[in-house]
Image (cartoon, rainbow, N blue to C red; front, side, top):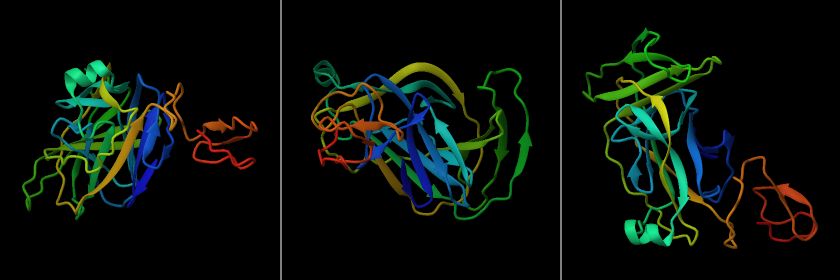
Length: 260
């Protein structure tokens, strides 16, 4: 989990929150994952996401309502996420065919908060023709006469009563700034099929954006591939004395051995 200026980015695998340590998130090669985004601010946030340097929102942006969160499960095509994010090992064959990119293994989340609140009229309807994971979809149309920006959004209300919101806007993405190369480098590809739907709206003028960077890795510092995702609840057992410690601890509190 990474927190910055009232905004949180979390990587989830099998429904569990993964541990972030020095910008790295560790999960086995072949795992499918999602990104949980939470806006703790009192203003709406506009979010752009790139993975391995690729715009996974297909030229659009997510908008998250104040004090709300949304989980993006995969690559967008139009207004629908059709394939989950899947982390795989960059093998020699993949390197020879695809090549190496400077931002492989990097998740880049750029977010900006709305400058002014927009008074909006909300139209609520239930779509009886499509299955949307038991969501009710609430479409909001906001017209920003000052900027003329055309932005897409959706609002979803889960069956458990928890509100989630997202939206979409045309916007260019920058290449990730951090380019450290990893020997255990992996890449994100299209995984299993899903149907996560989005709808359209407007958003107002934005404040300057900020960036959160996460790196995916599939092995430990010693080069051993991990077999289980390292979650916030994962305990690491010391190989010398057997004491268990939290996954964010580097050294055993009992004997001082470096943990991995």
